[in-house]
Amino acid sequence: MPTRPSDLLAAAYSDADRTIELRRQLHRHPEIGLHLPRTQAAVLEAFAELPLEVTTGTTTSSVVAVLRGARPGPTYLLRADMDALPVHEDSGLPFASQVPGAMHACGHDTHVAMLVGAARLLAARREELAGQVVFMVQPGEEGFHGARYMLDEGLLDVVPEAPVSGAFALHVSSTLASGSVNVRPGPMMAAADQWRMTLRGRGGHASEPHAAADPIPVAAEIVLALQAMVTRRVDVFDPAVVTVAHIEAGSTNNVIPDTAYLEGTIRTLSAERRADVVASVRRVATHVAAAHELELHWEHIEGYPVTINDPGMAAQVLETAAELLGRQASVLMPAPLMGAEDFSYVLQRVPGVMAWLGACPPGVDAATAPANHSNLVVFDEEPLPAGVALYAQMALQALPG
Ligand SMILES: [Zn+2]
Image 1 (cartoon, rainbow, N blue to C red):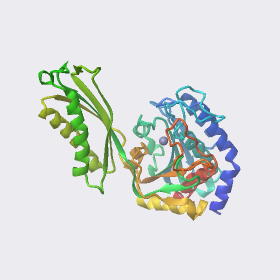
Image 2 (image 1 turned 135 degrees about the horizontal axis):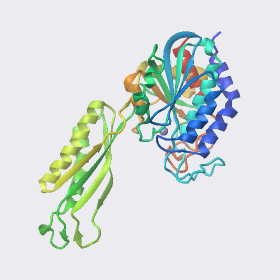
Image 3 (image 1 turned 90 degrees about the vertical axis):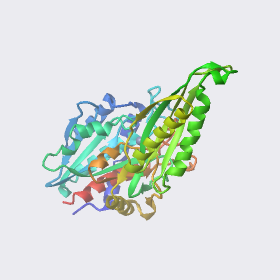
Image 4 (image 1 turned 60 degrees about the horizontal axis):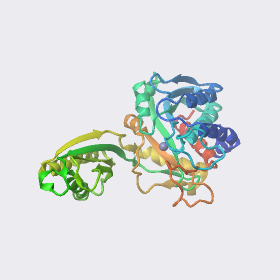
């Protein structure tokens, strides 16, 4: 008999203490980047009691575990990220970070705990699985391209006879209703590119600008020209955000500096728009600088690609969430989020879906709650068993025994 959704959820709730205990243990000891030895050790310890084939990364602290079902079949991947942020925690929680300058401010500690909980549920239901579940526990989601390292190390071929053919990831949000599952088909998260530019002019006396080549008004003109470019050249139905987030020039009131520095971000929702806007930012800035006989040095730092959900699998998440948690908990998102996610690299290779689990704390207004990445952010732990059950149910449905 396949496990009924209500029984799966009940099993996740009866295991909630272990899920929350692991979450808090990770929360106290956050680690940043691609090398997370303490976090990796906690994951390996939790996996050790389960019938999993476990391998660790050679270039990072990643962990890959394979659960083989009772019968052969395809391979389905469940992903959790496990890195923290360089933020000093001010949440006041009793289990707050004990590491100065590091905090699980994006809830990746909850993701690891939920994935481990799902591994326990699925290991107890191997009889119901025809195929393999791959548990992907990745470092370096916060800008370090951790998922890409794992793909390069053969993540998708960890079961050689059945390469990964579907993938699911869950992410908590402190500003979505607690226990809600939020997803949409198609673009889910943006591509994020950074750019930097240095305008080189000629310094001089502030009273004689004609004898200098002042980069400050040119920098100001570039800021405005970029906004005009976005509104006049970008189709509103394939949008872009260009933000100048940092600008620096000069040192005092009576000196014209010789350089001005600007940097910012470009967010887009399609590969075509992304290429077009990156080229347009460079072109506009270069030509505005040239018009004033200034040189421009430009640097583009490629970030994560667009995270694109498979439409059929997004519909399946909505259906599964409704079955497990009730209709009201299953939410079709009206629009993508303009943040970025390196699960996008996995979704470039296999059809899959990423969903958000609402974790706004009780008594807090979601509209004004400190958001993910805030030093004050708090995630409600109550919906974690729901996330455990959702992870497990996605795999059970993908690999029906
Ligand atoms: Zn995150």
